[in-house]
Image (cartoon, rainbow, N blue to C red; front, side, top):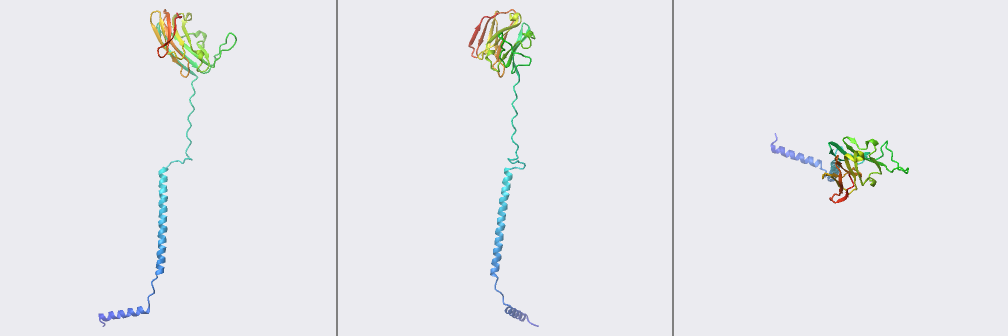
Length: 256
């Protein structure tokens, strides 16, 4: 039986013989370097792909921030709505000049402007055969006790033709109107169609009382009027008109 030291010597001798019988080949340095270069190229390519993916992801994120979901592109957006056409002006405009009670009866005065000549209205004819000019109609509707003054003359008896909304021929008129004796008796109305600078009128009566009336204008026109009642049995001593600064513009004593 061989001792432990003998076995060890035998193994060493066998290893030496095997080593000498099969000499070791040199280390494959070139192959190792080539493989290392290949792996390094692959890592660089993978890094480049990862960077490109990050840039693309950032671009998509910015796109989503600037264009929220559901947003339309400028080309697909509908054109802005056009404003609806302006509402045409009414064909008839009226304004209440004044109203009240006199002698126990209700009275009122209103101006009524027709932009076009109403159907059924005919322009008046002058004595020389010519027709009065006018493209519109201005009516002065006056009532005492529910009865329209001049109603006997038809629906247009208290109207005058005018040209448009700024006819100067419709100004500077002053009249006394009533239901009896051409406005010389009974309850009556003093109505003025003054110039533009007249702000109000004052009618002084024989009993010492005064009636102040403010000028009112038809919207969109220069047609204006003020009106004051004259009770039955009273006479007029003077009619005065004033501007907005209380300066008297006219003084008339020719009325009864």
